[in-house]
Amino acid sequence: MKGRIREWTFSAALIALVIIDLSLVASRYIDPKPSQDLAQSFRPDPTITFLKNQPGLFRLFAGIDPRDPLYMDNSFAYHGLQSITGYSPAKLKIYQTLLDSCMYRGIDPSFPVNMNVVDMLNVEYLVVHGRLPEPLFQLVNADQAQRTFTYRNPGALPRAFYAGESFTAANDREVFRVLNSPGFNPGRTAVLYRQLPQQITPVDSTHVPRITSYKSREIRISTDAPAGTLLVLSEVYYPAGWRAFVDGAETEIYRTDYILRSVFIPGGAHEVVFTFDPPLYRVGWVLTNAAWGLVLVCVAAGVWRVRFTGKRTASPGTKREPGKSPVS
Image (cartoon, helix red, strand yellow):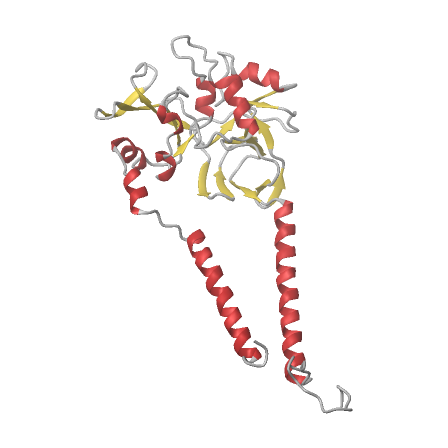
């Protein structure tokens, strides 16, 4: 088509085509909208309505028995409710190992679920088909139509809490032994893999860490412990990217209770920030922006060459007079 369409017209049309093509894809990714059929399938039932109205950060344990359909029910995820059973069979290995080694090794034969693990995972509600022993749990909602019952777990630990004692385990087997023991209290004792460099002190219930911001890549916590102690965050330990800062100074993250994370905090008021900042992400960000800069330089150089040097390539059909050089 050279010689029939001006270069600037063709360039503008090509750029417009690329922008339209990318915008169509990007709009679906950034602003997803469920179809009416999907919205109908996930209409909130009485159980979900009750849970969505509960304040604070909490998780739920749906189904309890892996054979129960509630165990992998995606309705909770659709409505922004966090469940420890997950919504996919593809789990992090560290989490699946905890489930296999501890979750169904309960102390009470009549209820074979390890409540030490359930409590430390911030499970405030259990949703089941059927009834649970009410001396242990409090019935707070019942959907008689679907035979779904919601119980509150009185022993649930908050998403962030203080642990005033620590136990250093030699290996995973010893960690599992402690987590499965009847005398273990995750709200008091943290099971670590390394010895803490400082002495920690128990903190009474009048001092509670407060999560001020909770995002997928950043968690901010305000602390007020009277003395140095261990702040445990009920989130998966994932060293390949997560970093922690106390008042802006980076601090070490300790692997806690096999799957959780914790940091040492001194006494007094402090702000603790957990941020997801993997080095490979920063390298990719730099390379991407450098590539964009190179592209812009090449475009600018091409525009300058065409506009100011006057160089043109002859059209394929251009004829020369006999005997004349192609460059004259």
